[in-house]
Image 1 (spheres, rainbow, N blue to C red):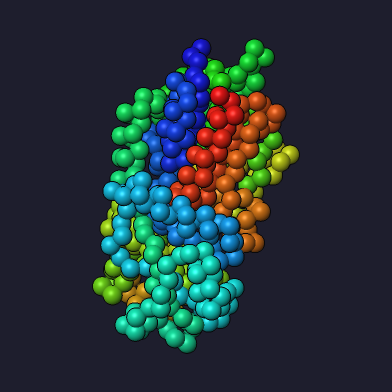
Image 2: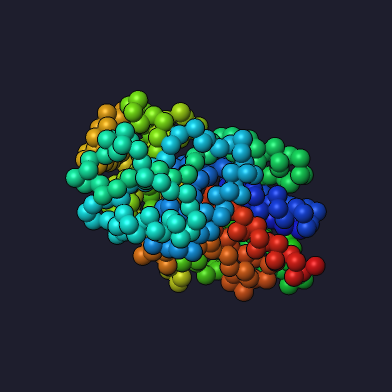
Length: 376
């Protein structure tokens, strides 16, 4: 049986970042990732937006934290950031949960940069359906560059990474620490002993909880589609988000040199929940692999072009499919609080962590500092 100070379940951006950070406090750290490489699920299959807070006009705390984290993330990963486009937020005249006046005041309140869009930019929008348009400061990240950067840091730090390895079960060791059973894709199994485990599996957090007989963390999941499109020239150097209702967003996607097109109504295809006490847990990744969903791109475009006519000239390339996971408590406000549950299932040293946005990872790392500060 191998022993580690810390085992990280899940090799996404959060899991890898926590592994690198916790290496400051302990010697032996290993990341267990069931896929053949790190950062291949939600860390790649997303809109690649570096949030500046604008998106969360109904959750002041999330917006403020995003605005603060924006500068930290851009500074830390400057070489992975695409800031070559202009970003605009427009407020829908009908069906929006915020008015243009409220949105502008909200941005001022959280200290986010905002100014009225130029007359040329306003011409891109249908003024009958759009109340106002603002230029803001928001970027995109290149997830392939980010993965390469993380791998480089992992190599230098000495953190061990086990890919093609899945965490099956865990249990408290009566002698102290935690015993975790793992299985590789070739069928071989191994037992590991750890002083502490951080479960950062995102949509897969409850996998090990379910098999270990531990309570499920309450989570909501959606099978989502992010359409990848080639945009006309007038949209090539811009990103657009319509606030705040059944609208759409179109953003540069640096890894492919394309744009993502998402729609509040048509991006989610199927939803389900993990409920404590429910024995019928659904493996989201297996469920996604078995599906053969049809793209809703045509519906996205049909609605989006009413607000921005040029969107009608986008060319569909393919789609990014992923399981998006949020806390049920954030549905109404669209907030993105971070899940941080210590001693989950009354197992000392076992912590479940989930963040809804890559760029707020610094908030989690501060909690890690507090955790180890208390211990040492």
